[in-house]
Image (cartoon, rainbow, N blue to C red; front, side):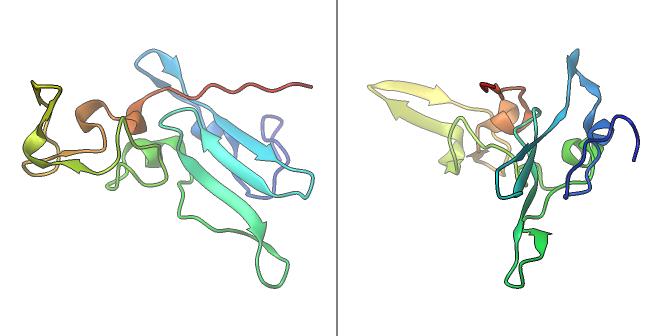
Length: 134
């Protein structure tokens, strides 16, 4: 185990999730509860990369399809895989809607529709704020 690798059961290495995008540093955070279950999440798009919980035989296993490194998150052919979606979820037909009498036109990124926040959805944002008390 390298000196920068944290002890975890998911086997992910923090350094594999560190790069700079748009002048901001990406990172991996591994949260573990008292039962030893783990959740691994990046600060880029809030991508969940592992959820380690016991299977039916009590052996811990990753129960999601995640990514092994930050480049896989960035270059995924499925840009919303395990990431936060938003500002809204699903499609806005033809990228247009009306609210309180005002018409809005959005960036279309899914055929003629706007999907999961369009061009600048949360899956490509640094919008994770971690707060904890010791």
